Amino acid sequence: MAKKRNLRFDEVGYWSEIKLDILQKYGSAYTTIMSKQRSIKGYYYIDGFAGPGVHISKTKKKQIPGSPLIALDTKPPFTGYYFIDHNEEKVDYLRQLAADCSNVKFYSGDCNKILLEDIFPSIQYSEYKRALCLLDPYGLHLNWEVMLAAGQSKAIEIFLNFPVMDMNGNVLWGNPDKVLPEQADRLTSFWGDESWKKAAYKKQGGLFGDIEEKTSNIAIALAFQRRLKGVAGFGYVSNPMPMRNENGAVIYYLFFATPNKTGHKIVDDIMETYRARGASDGSSDID
Image 1: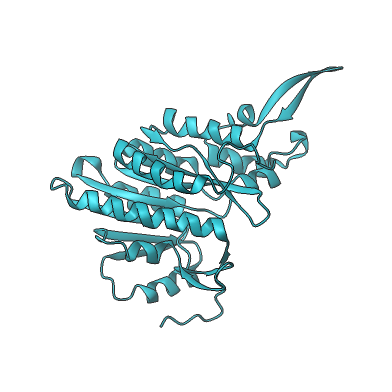
Image 2: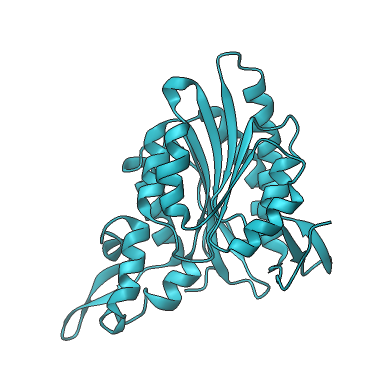
């Protein structure tokens, strides 16, 4: 058993467990399809914010597998695995859990740099390699260049955490003039440019001229969905799926983006089984 040391595992709620269920179900479908394609030379799993590999379930009151262990347990297996986390202690713990696996590479550091320089260049469409990549940051810790590179590769599919809670808490305020420039820069890095301002605010006529009002969470998420397709170049992007906390507030949206019509259909069907458990049209979003 891996030594815990002073490591604290994240506590995850109901919706985080749903996300893991979606990953597990699609991961199995993905490897099944890839294993039957003789032209494919390798299909890989990439986790940009892997953590230590386990969580504490708030609902079950016990330890549950995180995304890396779910991926390692997928049948048929992936050709190889890439696990990244900025916390070296978490990486060490995960390395112990996966000690029996010889086809895993571990990285400690900034996933933006590691993905663009070390991992994505090895997943080339022309070399018949493919990858499923989970990008699940805690907040605005992911750069647009990563999503852009995945989309333009035509070889990499992504599950993406769109961290609307961090956006609302630090950037998308009712009065944008009060937002700290460094916080606005974080959203610009995630979005890729300042077009987020147009998506997040609309001008309304007032008694003394136009005033800016914040749009809804779902409107902002849909604008990013269009960006993933139109700018990053993903052929298919799922409708944003609201993921909530125990109070029902949307804390992030889950996207799936892929060049593959079949993968898109499979994930849409999987997501549809969960959407009825929370608002899928944004009508209950809390801004």
